[in-house]
Length: 355
Image (cartoon, rainbow, N blue to C red; front, side):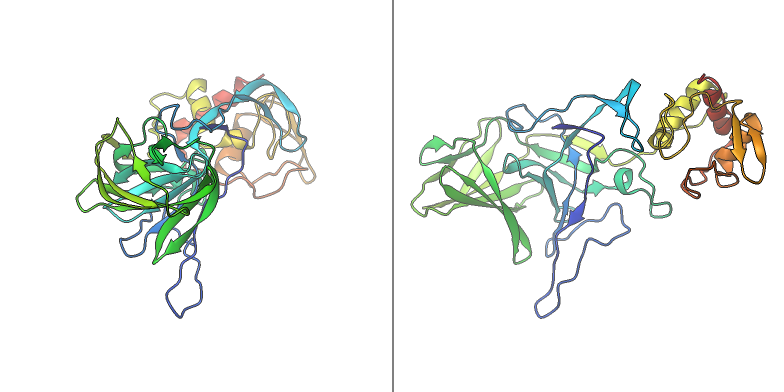
């Protein structure tokens, strides 16, 4: 459920095509809030929030721990500071049917985790804005919309009158008529699951089909209201009713207006604007020079000779980062951030404080 920030992530959607046409990738988009439709659901695999789901729901997920900071350039661990953990589901497949339904299917537990309406995923924290392309936060997508269903307790599917063992193995997914179908193996059979919008607002239709046609499938969930709408040998279809009420607003840029410049405000900016990704505070080398001991140190430039990293040098490096590139570092790596005077002064004060 929680993972360290050092893990890399890929986010992608599945491919789709119309009859008679070549397969076209539908994952190329500049929209951070793309959604699907009832006819063509949008499928995206990425890290999503765990929403404080029950421990029983995420029984097979590992738990992350804080890890020491390190320098990507030399692989050495830092002597101070650590990377925290992010409360996310790293094996999630998210599906949007438009305003009616969005849901998350977990490939570790092989079950529906939660569902929401009037929104989907806001990817700006991960993908960055279309204009800059810079990531604004951690790897997790942010939800927007109203969460109305959350999984609770142990897996609800029962096979031949008994709860299944829970020793599930995800098999894969495919689209049937444009709709995702998920498959997993448990107790010697394959279970396929489809999840679709229910007939009424904030309801979800879930169908389970066993590869063993003689199986009797039951659905048992004492914590959620549901209706069995079809029960046949080897299959069962149920309709889930709401059991939660949470509103999520997607990615919100933090309010970084500063009344008075300070080193403390500079530290907040250092974390928020991603300076932390390239500039260490402990002297170790990274993609950019360390901030430790930077103030009033000497910098050697082939065409300028020795330059003192005083306040003016720091301000120039922040507002016009490509004016002077320290030898051994790649030119053009740092973008110019739209900071006001007090924000720049706060960053300068913060760097000054790092002896």
